[in-house]
Amino acid sequence: MAESDREKVHPLVRAAAEWSWRLIVVAVAVFLLATLANRYEEVIVPVALAILGTAFLIPLVDWLDRHGVNRGVAVAFTLIVFLGAVGGILTFVVQQFIDGLPDLSTQATESVNSVKDWLVNGPPGLKQAQIDRVGDDIIAMIQRNQDKITSGAIATAGVVTKIATAGVLLLFLMIFFLFGGGHVWEFTTRLIPSGSRPKVLEAGRAGFGTLVGYVRATVAVALVDAIGIGTGLAILQVPLALPLASLVFIGAFVPIVGALVTGGLAVLVALVTKGWIAAVIALAVVVAVMQIESHVLQPFLLGRSVRLHPVAVVLGIAAGIVSAGIIGGLLAVPLIAFLNTAVRSMYTQTAQAAEAGDDEVQVGIYAAKADPPTWDSSDAPGLNGPPGTSDDDGAADADPDDSDPPTRPDTTA
Image (cartoon, rainbow, N blue to C red):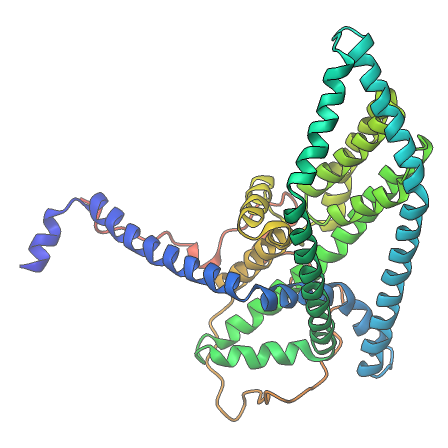
């Protein structure tokens, strides 16, 4: 009787209903994961950033390890050099900002005064009293919201404390991820049923390989963006050219959107301080650098490591910014790239028999075992792109499991 009732429903309606409830279950699961991530944001964000930092530094650690340096010493040396370089660059940039701020303020004041003079004596023909009234209104608004500004400063102090705490956690995690992150991942996969454990283990390794290629290429692209735009601003003698170039470097870690926003800020500073001619030239420099990035650098450096359609990149960044702000936009593309490679890897792996209990890698939760040097090799998992991608035209190869298309008995006559 049940089978007879089922046959009365049109196959398309039945298929749509089955897809619908499955999609609802998936949507609920995604919502619960997003809620959990938002609840524990102070922990999840440092973990995600530590994974990206590890992906950037681990080739150097592995190279030192492969050349006979003790892995613990290699981790310590790499982190000390990295933190020293970042600290030195930040100190230099902040000092440049402090030195250039008076000049920027002077030129900005002159530009504002010239705009006021044009509004009064130029075609708009506004009265001086109207211009002054606008300034008085701004001052009055600041005075009315003084309490909010003060509370915002207190909140900023709280944010600084959170950032410091997250920074300590991030550094702690990076030490152990660089030293034995592979064993940490092996221990984590023990939560997976034994039949699927080898596939998940290899998928995670391939996904991390994609992160290694992504971070390495993104740093190179961001450096080229910063040098190109910073050189143009310096030639135009725009104040704070070096801090603006540093901002472009940071913004370039958010593909497409970051470079566009920070480059627009550089153009705005050029407009305020040097006039519209300099702003047009700065805009041309920004556009030229972004074109070189899009058509030369990213295809050459990223190659098959991260092959994502621009639509997926933009939508992912938009979803990340809406859901988690700037951090979400920063982590969106690496997450999509990781999942893209991991899922492809799981689809293309040959089913492996579950290992016997005595053959499984036993990793204690408190064990700290050094990883073998792997990620400095050019053939490391995931560095050459997700499985199933073509070498020539970038099109995805057919999945080996899909060689014979499945039949659909419910739609055949």
